[in-house]
Each structure stands twice: as structure tokens, then as C-alpha cells.
Amino acid sequence: MAVRSSSSPPPRLAFVSAATPPAREAKARLEKRYGKVTTADADIVVALGGDGLMLQALHHNMRRLKPIYGMNLGTVGFLLNTYREIGLLDRLKKARQVTLNPLRMIAINTRGRATEVTAINEVSLLRSSRQTARIAVAVDGKKRLPELHCDGVLVATPAGSTAYNLSAHGPILPLGAGLLALTPINAFRPRRWRGALLSRTSRVEFTILDPRKRPVAAAADSVEIANVVKVTVTEATDIRLTLLFDPEHDLEERILKEQFVP
Image 1 (cartoon, rainbow, N blue to C red):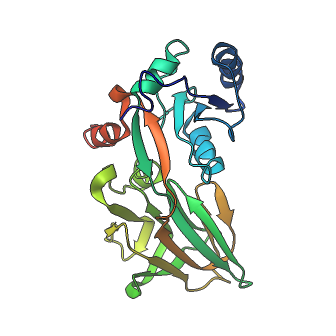
Image 2 (cartoon, rainbow, N blue to C red):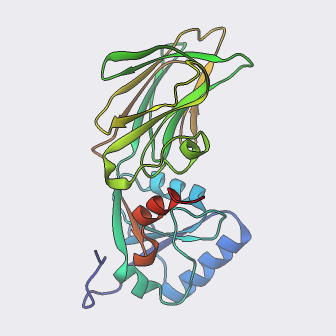
């Protein structure tokens, strides 16, 4: 789906960059070539950096509903297009849209304080001491694992399934699968449990069984909450994020190709 028709005026672009010298220098060159506006006034936000910078841009513009087009000046660049300065406006006209729904995490700590955070890639629980965590797992109100002994456990979106989830040997999820990945991190008991595929409508609840002796932290992308006792994860259906990709660099195609990497 094209962003604009050929007869439309050129979109107003806001450029955001990572803190690295190459990204900052690219931002200055692109602003000189294409002009600049604030993200609030922009039609499209152009993110320059790596996947981390793209996640920051998505979080910062979550309520503005601005489409974001990334160009890779980082390392992996899974969520970004190839960096080229020339022909940007034409690329934006031809770009395909991908809509993502983030996760919503509600974490309650040992003091009873509840914190709500969104995550585009995953929500992860990780042990905070030398001892393994002990976590009960419930899905849609039904206890599925009374006691999981592990280094941690995570819930990943399809877009995030190729990130930490993949490193933890979780499944890669196509964007249109309507699924979430529930993946343990170094499970000790039950030792053979490798995780589960859940409907995107699922409500996942984690209860920390011994939070004083075996503390656990919960992280939603880059936001971490220490000493949690209960964490609930659902899909934030009220938030729709739009990413733009060159036709040859479609995110769904990249996710599919990742499943055939030897």
C-alpha cells in the first residue's frame, strides 16, 4: 500500500537518529536535502540507526499514530530498510505498511505498586539473584504451570519473535499468525517444557512464588521493574503502530525467511 498518491504534495519528514556519529551525520545531510519538521508536525518519521533506535522511535510516537520509516545505520537492522540518501521520497511513496500491536504489561512489585508499560518486542521476567526463579503461569485465568523453575520466561509478539525470543529458542511467528510466543529461559523444572503458542487475545499472568528469597525483575522492551510479585501481559489492541518498508524489504517476508536460515 503506497503512503501517498503521485499527485499528493511531498510528505513532511521528521528525522530522528541514534547517538552514533554516522547516524547524526546522516540526519544532518537528510534534513538539508529534504527539510525538517518536528515529530508532532510530521507526516512521516524517519528513524536512522539500529533496531534499538527504531524501538525508541515507536515508543516515543505511540500516541501520535505517525508512520515510521527506518533506515539502518546500526548492526542487525531487522526493523529497518537499507540506508540510502537519494530517492527517499520515491521510496516513501512506494513503501508498504505493516501494522503492529504492542503488548501491555502490568507489573506489581513487593510494595504493592502497579506499573503499566507497553512492549513492542517482548515482556520478559528474569531472576535477580543467583538462585533460580520460581514462577506460576496462568493463561486466561487457568493455571497452566503451578511452578516453573527457570532463569526467566517471556511473552513475545510476532515482530519480537526474532529477537530475545529466538535467542531463547522460542518459535518465529509470522505477522499474520494471530499468535504470541510464551518461551522459558533456561527452564530447570519442568525440564522438557519448551514453551507454548498462545492466541493474541490471551491474558498471561505470572505469579512469583518466592519473591523475597528469589527476586525477579520484569522488563517491557527497555523498561525494567524490579522485585515484582505479579505480572500480567495482554495485547494492547487499542494501540496500532505503523511501520513502512520498501517492497523488497517487507517485514513479513523477513520473518518468513528467518525460519529457513541454516
